[in-house]
Amino acid sequence: MKEDLKPIGGYFELELFGIKNFPHINGIFVNTGRNALELILNSISKLQTIYIPYYTCDVVLEPLNKLNINYSFYQINESLELIENIELKKDEYLLYTNYFGIKDDYIKKLDEKYGSNLIVDNAQALYAKPTTKCLYSPRKFVGIPDSGIAYTDSYVDINSYAIDYSSDRFEHLLIRHDKGATAGYTAFKENSAKLKEHDIKQTSVLTKQLISSIDFEAIQQKRIANFKYLHSYLKDSNRLNIDSFGDFACPMVYPYYTDDNTLKSKLIENKIFVATYWPNVFQWCNIEDIEYKLANNVIAIPIDQRYGNEDMDRIIKIIEK
Image 1 (tube, helix red, strand yellow):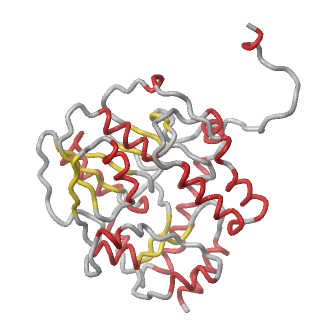
Image 2 (cartoon, one colour):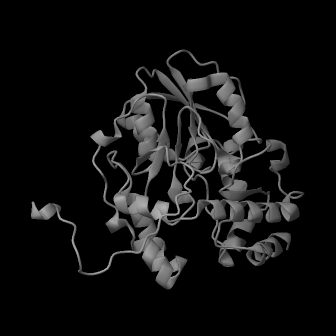
Image 3 (cartoon, one colour):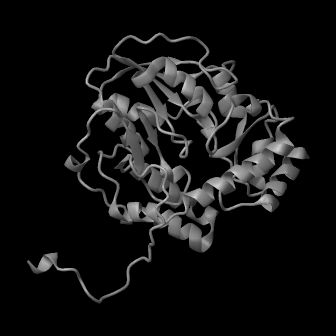
């Protein structure tokens, strides 16, 4: 049929060139991170209860509620590790968040203990090595509109899911490119809202081409360099003992745990935009709980590939004041 013929001529498309060093090319590509979690949960034949941390994003509840899965909360300590030993039964699972991308070593210990009953949320740890069951959210590391990556030890027929389209989710990225971050923030929030309660689909062709055009090795090197630079100046005043956490592949941000409740607003006033992870914790926990304090007092300092030492110095000066 003529519809199957490759078009020749017409207007030009985006120029996307394949670099092909994405660290999870063998993962299962879906349209969102929360749908990657749903895919993993769907792949488990018997799931009685899943344990989830209080200190995590409330979007993890979306697939749990959708699938009517029973869940129970657990607490963590100031090292971002389980505060108590949880003994899992055969059909029980533990969901652990790789906080800020710096808990790789601890996850190895959890993996040894729980094996295939462990589900790792690597949304903040794109470069962490996959465990038996885990998920990633690439858009937290690079400028793409959507996508999630899932790993599971059960067979998943990904081709039984429709391919998503993402061309209507680029507005915030384009506005930021033209007019800056502030101008595109409303569109960014609107795009995030579009991804809620979205059916599982395969990652769009456009988003996959974008992913294959990004130099992920260069991004990893830049993030690590910025992290180390900040840490060399801030480690003595950081209440989070990062040096005790062991090795990690690549952080998402530099988590700075402080008692200064004015610092976050000072940074924002100076156009250093720091996110709060996660505001839902203020409803889930009491003010004396460690999770409440972490959500309130840990400042997620940007260290990504857009910045260098000069930018890190600007941040350090504000903090040291």
